[in-house]
Image (tube, rainbow, N blue to C red):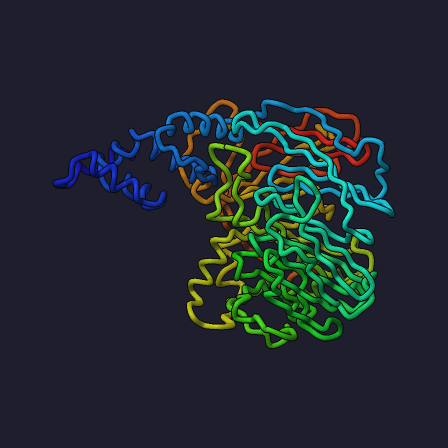
Length: 529
């Protein structure tokens, strides 16, 4: 690139002053300046501070230190971190078995977010958690373990989610005709010091044993989606958990009436992402504003509800029954204060993984055996959604046909197994575990960071990534009406796993490594940088 750069333009500013100007630029602008002339390129490339800033951008990270004098040291750590991911050379592989000592594993559930593994044991009289903060040698995070005994519940928790950055644990309890949300301290299991001091309560107006529950946290907002399993009636509630104020209540009546909310996620504290089944065969990804829909009393009906953006999905032959969203961590994520890490995942972009279940021609019924149905993954970066929001401007209910946003802004791929925890996302990376008859189990990682996928990185010894720029064709039988073509650039890497006794059933990607679990062995394995 240097040979194509022109000489420096006439500039009355000294180099030291140009460096101050560069310091106020965002990373894309800094990269553009490198291509203006040879002088600019040399000034930026010679600065550890600017190289550190560019490499953070390439890795999908952000700086967590306010001390600019340590740029050289942090750059060295970052380069070591990058080398580990480039070659998938994890420094440590070990087995951990964090089940609660002496407790029954019946009713066991687990979660992994922000580098913390949570495992729960449900008993008739109490709920307990075993917590493990996974370590990182490079980022200086030690392993920590602690147990929590929960005493505030009167019945079994139906769902729970945790946010280590706020030290927050949210439990959802269903009692007759009522949904109760508890906001607890992640370290003690008692009421969180920032909570409003009271339970968040909602009356779903139905038999609570028929409801499925999905819960999410974003800053001071906690959202709960309650779906009646038989009628598919849905209530979506958003609260400010620090004040106890209900910010949003949306209801969809369920079958046979449409539309139906299938899942939700936060973009900001005000903006929500919904997967909306408009008819049995058509679906949309919608963006709504809590502020615009907020009502002091009553609820907003989903049918006719005002929305900002509607991204249309290719229709199916026989129907869509599931449309789930997964992303981690939330967009407001920051490293917990107790961890003085040099860098962490950026808040600028995220990868949303949508899982669609298409009803096959054999079943014709969304309640029949899902082994007959087809599952498809749709990968959508936040930047793709924000681009369409910008295009919508001040218009409401701005609908975008699939061919105007999907082919160039997403990646779609079919699934050969619908096992939920054999694939996960973190930041802009996607992880899937695969089994091969000859060589055993392997992991595949897709990195959707567009700068990393597009910049020219020379392959070195042990480099395991290749760039997929060709179009992806989804031709699963019995799903969409036409062949779907998507072409969002992505990097891909694969690696075979160390041998172990029994098949792996869980695979989770995090910021510093990969967590692998075997239900059969009752064992977790962790590979970290």
